[in-house]
Image (cartoon, rainbow, N blue to C red; front, side):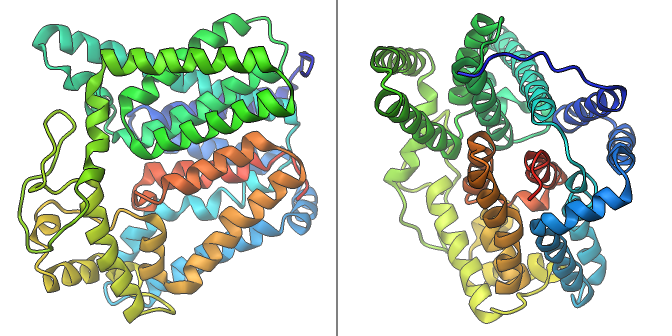
Length: 421
């Protein structure tokens, strides 16, 4: 266990710390777009002025992943230029701009590890505060209406104008960050962090994101195995196992609707021409409905067929929505057309939109090389966050939303900011 060290920030770091925390707040909490833009621009200016351009050049030589990140954006821009609908292409470029300006700003500074971890803790506390407000609002509406939907899934974060999957990803990150403090740091507020961790585990359950619940469960099991066997903390591990089991049992009993999210897996068959209603966690799931599982399987098939028709460069960014609708019409897949559904898989979206070249550039620059560096430096917290991102994007198209592009574009360069490369 690491000893707590008091890290004192200098004036430049204090300014950057405040700007980054304001960026987190502006990104997570609904805010004025102009204000959010000013905060983001000020933060990037802070990154540009943080060190000299000579130091930035030296860092660039050691951080080869920055080049690959930049090449991924260049390929996206090229895809826009060769699109038939170039105006829509530039519209699609907007939420993907963070893949250009974050690697070239935050990716070219070096921060102290203790300073980086302090920033991450600030992020976790902001997410926790946001969740407390969200749950309080949900409970208030439940007390007024008797409708428990306000404390589940999208209803829980309705006022935030975000779907539950995006907030669940942030909650997972916060759980990892706070867990590291509890188990690997000597912190004077450890008792408070334990309470925050329990609350965030409950929020993860209530948000009912199947993907993030699976990911969190896998990491908890892996951590318990490590703690019990590798560190020989048998009693601590057993206590944790029992505590998590009791917490899970209690959550299921108190909030049973979350389990409805998993009933979709009982009905994975589909017919494109079927026009049934969409399942909802608050109602029983039946075989005649479209649900999160069978809809995705059907949409993925359409996306895969588009890729096979245009394997090298894809259908191009500006034309991908139109081409996907054409494929849906070809299948007479009226359910997704009427409900404006995308392909719900970030990798597949990159693949049929920009081809195998785009997907390879993305994998190398944004996943493979960053993970390699994390494991070289034994920065397992950053590795887990990146892996969580990688898994989260299997079931959603993150890069069509400014929120998804902003967080993805910021976090991965930031997680490597204390390493030379």
